Image: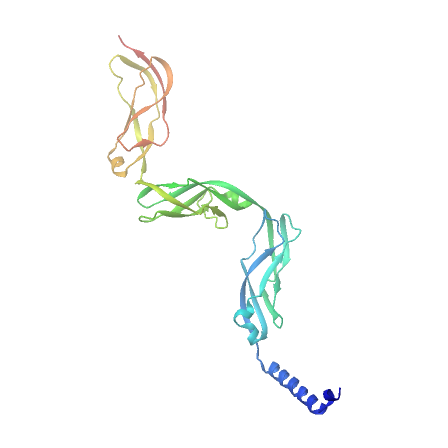
Length: 281
């Protein structure tokens, strides 16, 4: 005890000096402000629910000692909304911010958000891979689109654009008008080119019925005035019309037409006609 009290005034003076020095150093650190962007996190939602209409990030303005607003000291800063108890429909929530000790929040934009909660759904989409000068066959031919129900219902197909000799095509979901639905997740999100062919074009050409072969007579015939075909552009440019063979069958009937087309050209849709045909002796 006597050792502890030995030179007590000197010890107290030293302790006071240390405290004053610490206080001066603390007060000498400049207080500053810093702007910061943080992604807006969503907490409390069930796995099969998703928030739609939230901003992707928020803008923060922080104040504190300069050493606390530098580098890794800002790693703990986060922004979030807590949607515990929200199952579906619209909601309004304050944005909450997590800060390290000694740092003060002086600005937040937006500070309050309005959005809605929807069910997470999945839909199978056909894949269309486009190329400026080729027809592409890809694998797989369908992909799964996952996201908010309102977007999944709009999804029409998955489209990708290839150039040159690209072997892999990245996809994006689009609606019936071709507008991208970037918030939908595609699985897989890219496809592999398995086959390449010449780019096909379409033309609508007059349709004519050929003369019946010997031994047959067409008494009545009703066929469409034109037919839409597709094929190599150079071949299609040389075509003036499409001819159809007379079905060799006696009686009155409806039958698909056998079209006379050059190699590589085909009808876009099947064509039928109505006939009354008889045999001639």
